[in-house]
Length: 174
Image (cartoon, rainbow, N blue to C red; front, top):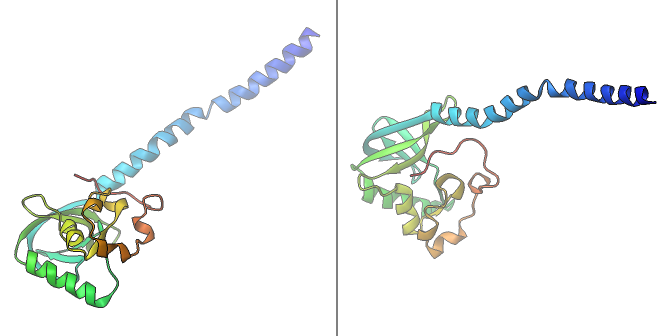
């Protein structure tokens, strides 16, 4: 009787040993996933400094030779308000020096990120304070939410701005 129990226990122990072998591989994979995400974010990180020479739209700036898209805010889809926002930014920023940081995805020529003035004020915050844009919490970490004007509440947030629906690496927030 003891031999039957011992055989059953040994058989069960052998099956455990079979499953124990690849555990280290599973552990390495689980630990490597966040590391791969950080590495991906680090590899695509770009910093550009220069003067704003043109504004294609309120969200797309030309800094020196580089095009930078402000991903920390959402501009309204209404053409008249978008034009007003562009004119406002032209009056505020044209010819000023800025430092932009972000990520260039794939073969795109546009850097997706944020820009800040020499005093540390972000360009997205200027748009949010003026009521032309709404904070995108997934990209900015909610930094501009306190400065949102009442008029900006009508601007709908796209899926990329909802933190629970965002995909891909997020640029570091300062």
